[in-house]
Length: 540
Image 1 (cartoon, rainbow, N blue to C red):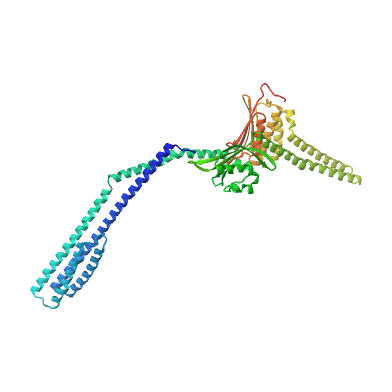
Image 2: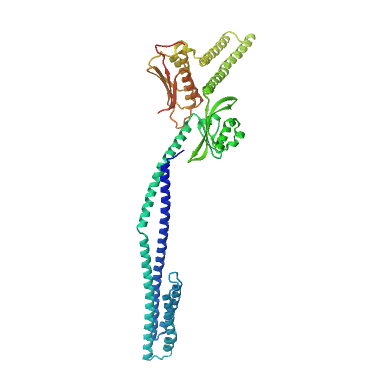
């Protein structure tokens, strides 16, 4: 199977363009994500700096209140805040964004200086009760100076952090520039075009696959598909019927195992094996296939199959050779009729004859002994006559099946009416015949064939349909007689022609006619078309 080379090239170019654009966009988006992540880190750090600023304010305020008021509560609060500040400053110094930052290091040094001032100067003086105005004023001013230095350094760090946030915000915005817009446009365009191009590219291929699948399924030829490994993947209905295969027994089985499991198929399968191995086409290969002791000549094609120039398997297509196409079906039909007649003679006529013989023997014994005379003898003889009459009727029916003698005497329509009367009684199915003229312009031998076809159609209705009524319509169209047999047995989805229907078709071919069968609106319909003899009926 081939595809349009230009469409394939365009499809590959679009696919490559989509992949390249996707890679560039991925790199851009990853860079943008990194910038956003760093910006988020700076924002979290800004919140930590605000907490640190609040802690420093609380620490310096508590120390100032301790200097002025000298109450122990303020000193304890100072200790708590200073401990928290030392911990946060260490975390800040070790953070990824401010690692080894000199301003943070200076902030830590200033905090140490402030804490040294508190521990070496403030606390000893306040606790010594030497709270002269000069000392208080010194401590108060020194506390303000150190507080100013701490807050100033902390503001410098916060400003630097704000600058970093602004910087990464601008980088993130700049990353979503015209290049990304262009890449996005290209990506969206290719993503929109790719499915359409794929549809154009693969539509013929998929349509061909569907057509081939449907053709194989309903083909009269036997079709078997084997993959590149030699495993059977598909057999159609005709293949199942011809070779007597069940799908569950053959699907998935390797053809190397066929000689063991299906020895009668060896002649047909051997060339298929070579076709798979050598990827070689073998056409019109003559094969003899034996079915129940009967030899059937086949013509078999072995066709390698490729998809995108890659070998995927071989198809075996088998058909009955032209010189034997009709022979098996006609033989089957004749054998079927002979078997039915043999059974009827055995079951009915032999039964009647046996009953008559036993009755005669019994009556003769009774008469010999003097036990049967007069009225009982007459009644017994009357019963025997009834048996003989029934046997004669049955024999007449069987002889009519062998050759419908009524056609020779009264014609096809009257013979059918006689047959239908018996058919209705036996099968409880009402049959209606519609015609314009009882005199049909047909050869006698063609009338017999039509009679047999209608017989077979009615027999199939009894076997396969749930019909209560059958219509048989005779209509003339120019030089053609059209006979339609239609039942009311309902429609079914699945329908496969059996040997009976194929036998009917071969009978129609014998008189130059055609036959069509299938489901119609209310049931199954068989339509037979037969050429009419110009100028009147021929007695040949």
